[in-house]
Amino acid sequence: RLPKEALGSVTVRPSATLLEAAALLREQALGDAVRHLVVRSAGGQLLGVLSALDLARALCSAAPEEEMMRRIGSNTAEDIMKPHTASLVCSGEATLQQVLEQMAASRQNCVLIADGDLSVASLLGVVTPRDALRAFVEHVPVSVQVGLWLHGLQSDWA
Image (cartoon, rainbow, N blue to C red; front, side, top):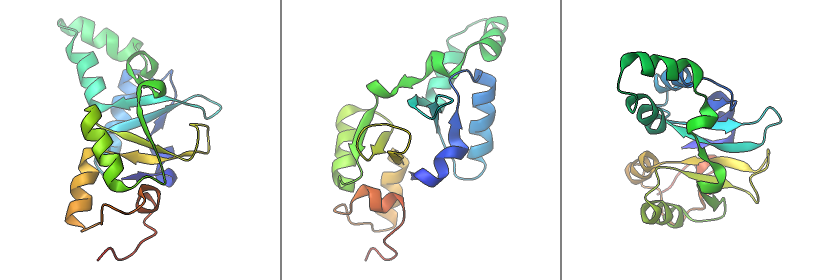
């Protein structure tokens, strides 16, 4: 789970090159195995989400090595990100079960959790399929509000 407090460390500007995005993903993977970057404007507006899978697809679709190297240095996060308008968004008041069901039904690999619209302050976090496994292992009740779970406000789930 990626709560609001951690979003700054996994945020890139739309102008970040694919090399910069890949370097940040690699840096973050050494700790929490983060596979998604939040793309925000200089003013903090949410523009989209860039996943490791998006990055791999963009790089691997370039057959010749020279073309791949050109793309790494010249294409930007904005070129390959999934716009927030195409992303799955759930309220922080939704239950963990509702969020995971919507993610499964939509076949998306992350859900943005927001409080209201997707303005600067309202993005509460990101939930991924890996979080479903973590919740299962931690015996988190599926009835818990995902906003509370993201922020670890419940210390004992049993």
